[in-house]
Length: 112
Length: 112
Image (cartoon, rainbow over all chains, first blue to last red; front, side, top):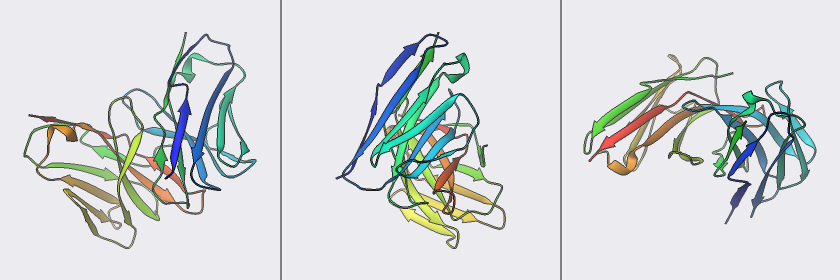
């Protein structure tokens, strides 16, 4: 069966520090991968999606970036975090575009 | 950008009652999906309805879709305390990496 792992579960970082959040999927190949951010009490905002290795589409201009170095690995990064980067970050995957997405348990990021 | 708007934003009912949540969206879609999120967790897919379908059932869930009004509703019948969660609608776009655009969600509280 397929599983998705996100880590870390929680992270507290100072303003201006770098960021690396990792997401991996097991039990499937060539998944479509997504990064979302959720502010408290709000819906999900799509940040990036990837349909294949090295293929990244950005939805929102900001100081975050994403990479997909391997088929089932999706990384969210920042060189310098801002206070506004705080939130709940969720990774998701699907086998086919438009089909139900499967979500990880998220990373709670707090910026001090 | 957010595609959908959901109402109500919050709903509090007694166990055994029905809960209805509504979702409106702005553009043409391929399908519409409903997800559930328990506090602090990732989202779980509930049900998908295609643009050429009008109604769909899954257990205690009933979803309707009116593409002329660009709206959908989720009905949970005979609610249980365990149904307490946030519920989100999401519109899917096959030709854009299968990305989902989420509404702001409805926070459902079912009191025993």
